[in-house]
Length: 366
Ligand SMILES: [Zn+2]
Image 1 (tube, rainbow, N blue to C red):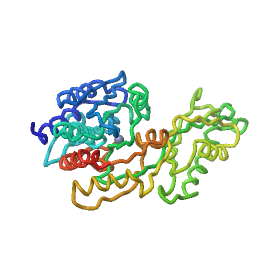
Image 2 (image 1 turned 90 degrees about the horizontal axis):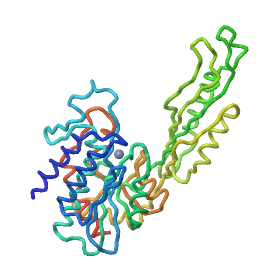
Image 3 (image 1 turned 90 degrees about the vertical axis):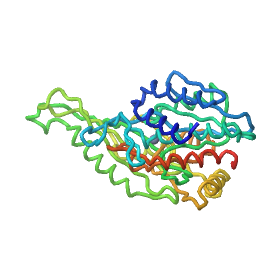
Image 4 (image 1 turned 30 degrees about the vertical axis):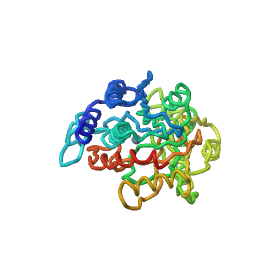
């Protein structure tokens, strides 16, 4: 086995396999087959395309997770290569999902194979999960792992692009839909109606002002944005009696769903309803947490230098593992988050190989 070549081949293959959220079946099969051919002790797949492979039988249970789904393409003209066919040029892999998150999937799958090959698993069991529907935030994978396999990991490593930094927490994320009601009339007599769009724009301005309200020690400022707006109207010459807008809110430590929706309720006082679409908690591990220390040791042992320990501004499956289930979690991954979700998404292959080093030494140092 030539690890470098095999891993590259595998990564190019999964990047070349389109896997939008909810359509992961094909890539899920490739990942499961790869784990099997790399002699994982067992490999299981569920109906959503989540894959989990196991290595070892030791007491400590460690879960690695990276996701196999990707976002779509907004403007194909901005791409220099076919986003759904991986290109490898000058050590860089291009294609949708190369960085977010298939480079991490490949690194974790191959770290598992290295651990297996060298029999490094005396005192731990490693589970490598390639999860589906991360981008849409549906937590089926965790149900699959914790409920169906009946195990709770002692710690979790989330593989998402971190530029090889150690991540000890991240912001949470919520989505709300606000619907504002007014009164419809013919557009020739607007004063007799109540224009729901005008009311909504007034609320939206006030919502934007929430951005500078406060700041926390670790995660900084929460951010709030209105990301989409719509109205259902009989015609364009009618004053609309409804207007809905969507809010994306990035939360900081200790913020609850209630606190966040109360802020919006205070602004959209009457004639509106607020619906939560999603809520994922922020989380932060203390700097001196034993998992942070083990990760620093794994980094130092892999690269002979001190790592940067920081926080992610975005949200990952860590919201379920640490935010909901309180399982100590860190993030670490090859690739830079600035290439995620954009045209010409890319990852350096040397980063992927370096991540394999970290992932393969971490379990024995935890
Ligand atoms: Zn991701």
